[in-house]
Length: 591
Image: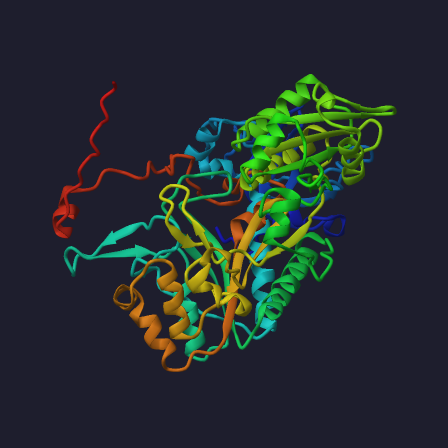
């Protein structure tokens, strides 16, 4: 049997009528009409209907034995379907194959879930039988979309003069903001590699090497808790450019996305993409990755209530906090208020103040605590119209921002304000260079320690380091952070100053990053770059809710792969070769 003459199932059209073809695939559906038997035959390219007529006795008899998902080979002429029987849902719907021969290449057992439809199936079951799940049209479509996006990226960057270069996966452990996956070295006992969280240092070294424009679609690894948009291993588009400033990097990334969206989705991305500073994003949207498909914006109300006698607002303002609010363009009832209040409380707020704007003024249990000037200014600042509601949070600035960001998102969902088909890109710029860890309170790098401070803020590195802004930028799409980038430090002394700001001594910096600092001493060009998660890009392009739907073999929320049962116990022989002993964590005793 030769497959050289194979015709893809989804390629057949009316122009091939009367031609004899050989098609191969899986039995997608089967219908026995008591004489004629019809099957839908599926391969990667699509589906075509095959007719088995009793006139071809052997083929007809074999068709009677076919089970769903069996693999078969069909031979016969392409014929035009009788008028009125065409299937407009299929690209091949005007034709069918009149089978005169069929071979069963592999008989299939009944699958554990329906493969010929995209109905809801328990995710654990889908992941255990992922090879069957990937046969479903939706999943196959997602993986083909992923391929087209990756190809469009490569084509664009190649045309822009970028060179694709592979960097090591087994590297020295470096701080990237998440836990490393460690790999013991057999040849150097008691030493470990780390699986690369990103190619950050290597791509900077490629700029020192004079490669000028680098990119890579690269696998990265981070040992962190799972979320809908997070996996322990993921793929990112990584690029770096020499002799550039922020505008140069942002321009390339914008034009790349515009190219990809037009080529793959036939959607126009307006460029230049709007830019919002980090401080402005936190003030107006409460998050540094705002969803701009809806226009709800947070307003600063502190000055309105600077002299208020309302106790809750007074206490917050006296403690150095703020009062911020959000206009909601509709009347909200008790259930909606409860839901929005809960959204605020999940971010640390103690509660949510609210007013309803009516034709004759404001209606709220707290209206009596405010004077006419305060209420008039509230109307003016929020632009509230009769029928609107205004909610407010009084707390520390960071709590008020996060709480109203959560309220904004919850209100948009419940009110149906989100354009599910829209794509709203935005750059967030001027991030803080440093931030404090919520767990330890220690100063850490907001992006990574190789990000350059803004020149005008360099004097603050010694006196007020938490006020220093970075030459960093994030690209956000529909409320999801796609990726981050920055202009890098290329001067060894400036790099040491930033290390010092992170509490790293000169000796410690030389021990951990001496190779980078030494490279800078041999002439490093100004350089900058960007990296974004390919999985997240495909997820949003496909309209999916999690990146697991656009990865061929993902891990579940416990970082396990049910299909192969990974991770698995280590072989004792392997552990002996590595000089390792695995110790189970002590079980905490219940009190």
